[in-house]
Image (cartoon, rainbow over all chains, first blue to last red; front, side):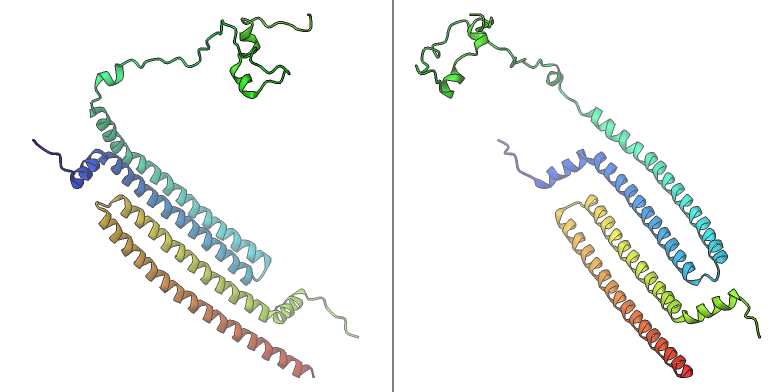
Length: 177
Length: 119
């Protein structure tokens, strides 16, 4: 008789093989995240350079005209840098989309290859009706068991049927009597 | 009787000469701010590198032992970098202090010279 041996390595390897497409997608996503974060860092560096250059100009300006001219020059340069960064981000996005498509296709293929027994899908699930209320056709004794002074306990109130069900669904208007 | 001529350039130059120490202090302050800003940016870059490398190590591990070894290696590298950055910050602080001391000394000498001349 063969006894099953708990082999952690083979179990881990099996898990790795079955989740290989997911791992691949994770690695690709991480690569894209890396590039995106570095691009954001570079944008932050551009902002830092711009603000430092602006503060230097403010201190070293000889005249308002000189200050405005230099400010415009720095603004134009900074705008060009930002445009390049946006192009870089767009390129990262498109490249990531191109890279992740084969991995997603592989994951889809693996999902399709997994055979699910037909009985697991087509077996009807028993329907359990939970919202069916049963009408009470007999008069409850809870009313007779109530204390004579007219003060019923909470236990009695929960045990006794409501007025609508007690009177066969026909509530009586007591004001007319 | 001599008429005084309104000369904005002379007034502007006089103001510049009077506020020269202040301007110099401002320039030095901007320089120190630039160094501190670049330093902070570099520290942020170190942290970014650390986080990204750690994420890559987390995804690419094959065993818990390897993961722990890589994490230890990364932590030691980051601590080394941060120690170097701490020394850099100390250097910046000492140099800025030296510059400020020099500026104050120069401004005081200039002011005393002007006062002596006026007396």
